Length: 96
Image 1 (cartoon, rainbow, N blue to C red):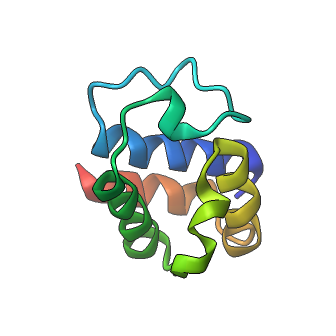
Image 2: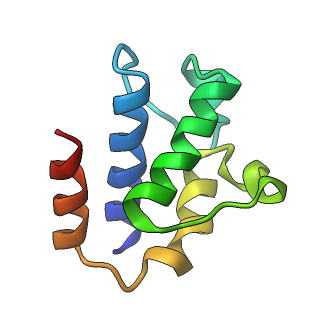
């Protein structure tokens, strides 16, 4: 997956967890929790979805790396680089 695909995957997960939020105007450099309403349980749900869908285990010590959209992409890039958009599409379809 490239950076744009990773960003789409993250936004898709957030949209599932916070369906009423408008993600189209997210600034990738600002903290997610400053832009949309995400509480600590929502954040944990995001982490669990990353693990369930992509097999990415995010240790608690690394949670701070996921504070921004850019941070999420940077953190996930090495874990998801070898995955294709096809895998992304299958994962998204599995949630429907």
